[in-house]
Amino acid sequence: MTSAHSDPAPVTVRVPAKVNLELLVGPLRDDGFHTLSTVYQAVNLHDDVTVAVNDEWACSVVGPYADVVPTDSNNLAVRAARLLADETAIDTPVHVTINKSIPVAGGMAGGSADAAAALVACDRLWSLGLTTEELEEYAAELGSDVPFLIRGGTAMGSGRGERLAPVLARGSYHWVFAISDIGLSTPDVYAECDRLRGKAVVPEPRPNSELMSALRTGDPHVLAPQLSNDLQDAAISLRPELGSLLESGMEFGALGGVVSGSGPTVAFLVEDVEAAIDLTVALTATGAAREVRKAVGPVHGAHVIPARVD
Ligand SMILES: C[C@@](CO)(OP(=O)(O)O)[C@H](O)COP(=O)(O)OP(=O)(O)OC[C@H]1O[C@@H](n2ccc(N)nc2=O)[C@H](O)[C@@H]1O
Ligand SMILES: Nc1ncnc2c1ncn2[C@@H]1O[C@H](COP(=O)(O)OP(=O)(O)O)[C@@H](O)[C@H]1O
Image 1 (tube, rainbow, N blue to C red):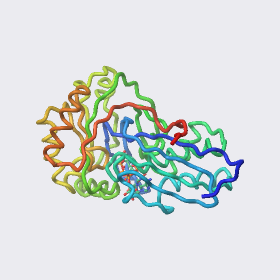
Image 2 (cartoon, rainbow, N blue to C red):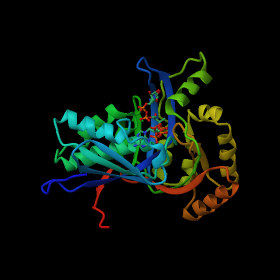
Image 3 (cartoon, rainbow, N blue to C red):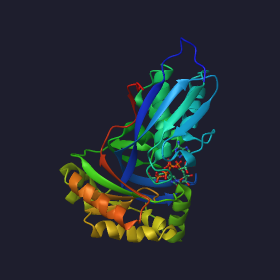
C-alpha cells in the first residue's frame, strides 16, 4: 500500500449487528422481494471497517470469520465504497480492511453492516459531508438491511425492509446469541418460506401494536412474548436442529427465543447480565451451537471511532 504524504488519515467506523424483534413477511413482489414489516434492534456485536487511500481498490478481512468472507468485488463493503465513489464522481481508490466479529451468514446482517460502515467511512475520508438521509438512500441500493445499520437503535422497517421509521424503545435488553457452524443463505430461506406457504393468500404485513407497547415498558418480561419471525419455520425446515436449540434455551431460563432474521443464529432474550452469563454457560455446555455470545441492545448505528494507536 502506498500513500502520499498529503493523503487524509485512514478512517475507522464501528458498526453493530442486528436482531429482528419482529419479522412479518408479506407477499412476494414482482421484483423478487417480499413486503416486510419488521422491527430491528442494533446489538453490540461489532465489525470495525477501516478505509485508507490506496493506489487501487483492495480489501482485507481479519478476525475469526476472515476465511469465509470474499475480498473481491463481491465484498459488500467494497461494493458500497465503489458505489459511493461512482455516485459522487470520486476518483480516489481505497483499501478496505474489515475486522470481522459479526457471524457470517447468520441472520445478523454482517455484510450489510460492513456496507453501511464503508459508506460512513468513505463519506468522512473523502470529505463528502453527506447527510444521514443521503447515506441511507445509497445504503438502500446495496441491500434491504443496510439503511438500518447506518441508523442503529430500534427502528421499524417497511417496504422490503429499507424504509425506516423510529420506534420509541425504553431501556436496554440483554441477549444471548447461539451461532451455528454453517450459515443459511437469505434467498434460500425466503424461498423456503414461500414453499411452505404454498398457494395460501398472504396478507400485507401490519406491525404488531403489542410489540410497540412492550418496547415502551423497557421490561424484557413484557417484550419476550412479542418476539416473532415469519422466517423461523423456514429456517427450522432447512435446519431442524434449530428447533431443539430454541427449546434448550427456553429450558435454561431464557424469557423468549427467536431465530434471528433468516437464521441460523438463534437470539434469546434474558432478564439481565447475570442471566445472560448463566445461559451462555448452559448453552455452551450442550455443544449445540458453535459459539454462544452475549450482547446488549439497542446501540448506535455505524459511527467513526478514533484511530487506533498500536
Ligand atoms: C432476512 C433479513 C431480515 O432483516 O435479514 P438477514 O437475515 O439476511 O440478515 C433481511 O430481509 C435480508 O436483507 P438483506 O440481507 O439486506 O437482503 P437483500 O440483499 O436486500 O436481498 C437478498 C435476497 O433476499 C430476499 N429478500 C430480501 C428482502 C426482502 N424484503 N425480501 C426478500 O425476498 C430476495 O431473494 C433477495 O434477492
Ligand atoms: N463484508 C461481508 N461480510 C460478510 N459477508 C459478506 C460480506 N460481503 C459479502 N458477503 C457475503 O454475504 C453472505 C451473507 O452474509 P451476512 O451478511 O453475514 O449474512 P446474513 O444475510 O445472514 O445477515 C456471506 O455468505 C458472504 O458470502
